[in-house]
Image (cartoon, rainbow, N blue to C red; front, side, top):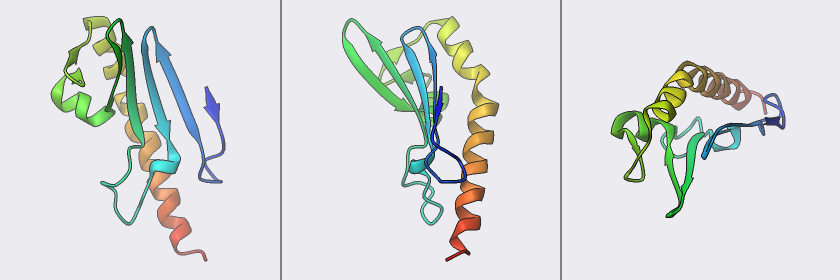
Amino acid sequence: MKRGSAEAGNEIIELTYGNLKLVLDQQEIYPDDPGQGTPAMIHYENREGHFSSTYWCWEGEGDIDGHQLTDAQNRWLESKSDYVNKVTEEWYNLAEAKKGVK
């Protein structure tokens, strides 16, 4: 599901797979400080509660806030890697271009 507009700088994209939700949020793009925002978050719910991680932390750590995912869940997230990187790069480029337009 998409909401907002990339051109307006407020696009949000939500992708779900069972109890996983991948949320891409353009409003978390800070071109002056790229490490500041969290434009790609994973939310995971199970009987123990709600847990979250940035997409890139999951790529590096292989879990969500210490919780292991199933092979199918990991494959689904891996299948989104190119998309996550493409979308967030496009958003950074849009934000950089807008910095020059006042």
